[in-house]
Length: 168
Picture 1 (cartoon, rainbow, N blue to C red):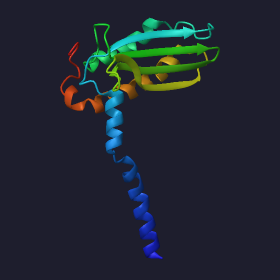
Picture 2: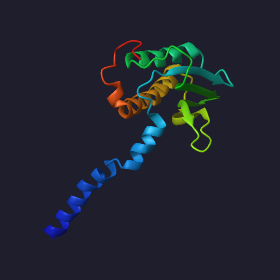
Picture 3: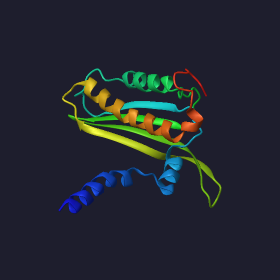
Picture 4: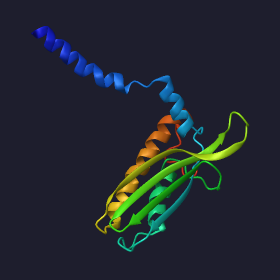
């Protein structure tokens, strides 16, 4: 009986560690989605609404959150060149969706043509009860996920940039 309990405990402890191990395929996907050698990111922020259920939620409110976060991480792009960070909040009656999408330059391996494509995205959605702070908080969470992942994937190139306003 003790042997069975020991094996069960060992499996319970080891199972999360197996899931947490990053594979080469995971690293390749991360690099495709988020790797930019820590290039600054140019944000494009907007609120799309089809109803006035969230009053006092303006593009400027969202821009402040995004610009401050990117500036603090040393990632705020001043020029309108890729990579772009599209940040959009859509409001429909009492529902909302907050989208954070990274668009970067990619090359078609068959034709060698270059273009821009969305390579990473994070969504948050829910019911807002009319409170703009709730929607901004949800967007901030999605943006925080982007920053964490972007800095993790670009770690070797981003080291030492945090807090350097406007650092390349």
